[in-house]
Amino acid sequence: MTTILFGSDLSEHAIPAARWAARLARLHQQDGRPVRLMGVHAISPEELSLLRVASGNADKDAPAQLQDEFRQWLEPIDTQGIEVEVNIQIGSPSGALVHAAQLYQADWLVVGVSGRGQLSRLILGSTAERLAHRPPCALALVHPDGFAWEGDVRALAPTDFSASATGAVELAADMVRRQGGALTLLNVVELPRSTPSLVEPAAYPAALVAHLEETQSSAQAQLDRLAEELDLGTQLTTEVRPGYPSHEVLAAAEEHTANLLFLGCTGRSRVAEWFLGGVARGVVRHAPTTIVLYPAVEAED
Image (tube, rainbow, N blue to C red; front, side, top):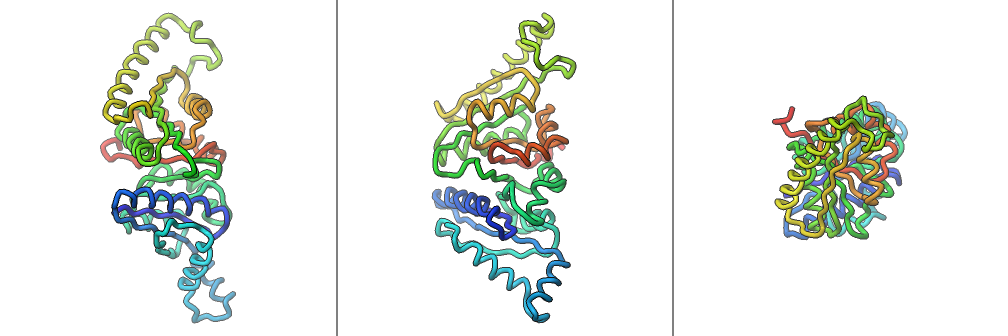
């Protein structure tokens, strides 16, 4: 069974995540697999007490009331004919989502990158960085302008050939196989930090040029082997470029008009450190597209 969870603060800003999760569930269901789709809403103990007071009935089952509100919120959303379970968690949004994902052994967790209230702070605040570092399962951060299922996937999967990055690549390839579209595999040959970013490669010292050429050739060979294993034919292209991971990944996403970006949460290079480190908060907040993070692989920890 494929279990897909999505978080909601019951605002209109959470609707794209719910729709995305429902379409993802339908995609898996088309293979004949059983699918479990669950919406998770978190409420703090303080908010729960206020809700009881506001209802004018201290004996009112507030979680049941929230379930009713959740189902009303779901009414205008096309859930693709899949029944949605509603899960009310008491606690912080981040803790609630992680707990639910672990409790129900979720395969996917889907959340939006804009919203209001505590769920918004989950994605846009410091908790987002912690969740991105250690997602309990595949984590989709749904951007309003990202992949919306109406057309083909244009996926970009940067890889440093680590186990976590390879897991992200395989997720991307699976999505392209099911939905149609194209996948670009990208490897960034990282420049030494002292190399000026605006200098043309022709101006690099001869030793650095030789090193880059050798490293790029090796990376291209690894990409070719990976592409052969994925067996996507003309739907897959590969690219190796020198530079700084942050700049090159964003530049490639723009050049390929990517609507899905797949990343592993750990890795051998500063690609992972760049994306999931201090810059992550700003990138997620201003993400140009939907991002899928593959969880850390224990062997890499």
